[in-house]
Image (cartoon, rainbow, N blue to C red):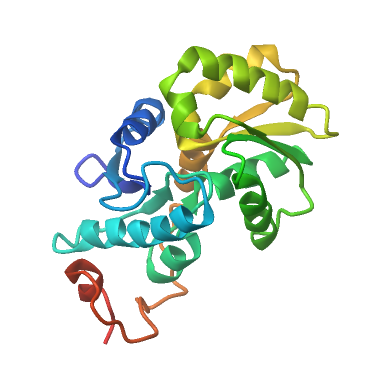
Length: 249
């Protein structure tokens, strides 16, 4: 990594709300080290806010599409990919297909929170609880996750009303801190930046999922050597050109 060839990281917002992408950019850009750059991408199809199993499934497709669109036709190499959603849609697929490190806001937050011990999650959207429990279990953090506090407003609604978000998230974090945990994850791309604002009001460390995503990604800079561009193990039909072009025949 040098001034002429900065490390390039792709941040994918897998929902169609460009305000969420802007939020991620506003929070993450100042945290970027020298000689590194972030490229931001917003899903071109799917839900404006991922709040259920169906929208999560579509978002996984949108993530693969955004990644493929970046690589084709430019073929610009990437040093890492960050899925900008606290639910990590497409994480396992992109990790299988990509020759660079891939993580998501949830996985990165789990990694950082587990260092402290058991943790709680605070996030927006009531349907997220079973989805996040399943994700934590699949990533090996099931025993660390002790409590999920979902607030009634969605992440998109919290993002649109900062004053309401501050009051709502503060109360939720204080409640989550009573679950016998050592840290609290404030999860959601739309909630990026709020952890720092309410940290002084909560006794336990609060982990910002967006910041965690960037920090974990930057610590995984080595290119993958365990794959040989095995980007597809099955025949596809009717896929977009960018995805089709990345298949290995």
